[in-house]
Image (cartoon, rainbow, N blue to C red; front, side, top):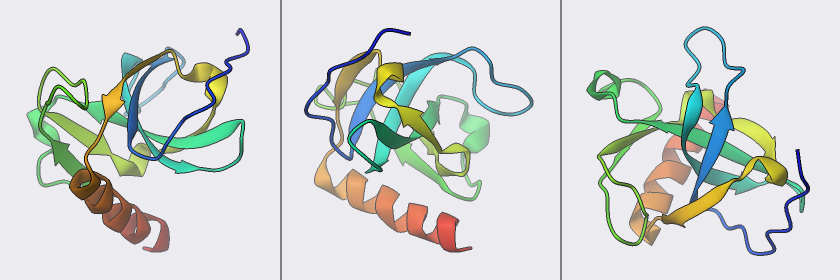
Length: 116
């Protein structure tokens, strides 16, 4: 994979990531991911998004509505229980950025997830 030189990756950004090696119930294919935390300059924690309504009501899932700002085209569910560390080279295309309320909701639920 080619080295990515994105200088301004922020918590709350929505990026496309290709996860073709996923197994089991992990989300696979090219799909939006939300940057949950910045781990280092080269690594971020991301959580995949799903459009499956079956995710409603599951633990550690945040529903996000599409806006011009976030770049999503359908109601999406951020799957915090499937979050992982990713090298920034995996970030293929920035779709947009979540608003402050959505970021706060995700952060609150993410803290519950990692401390549960």
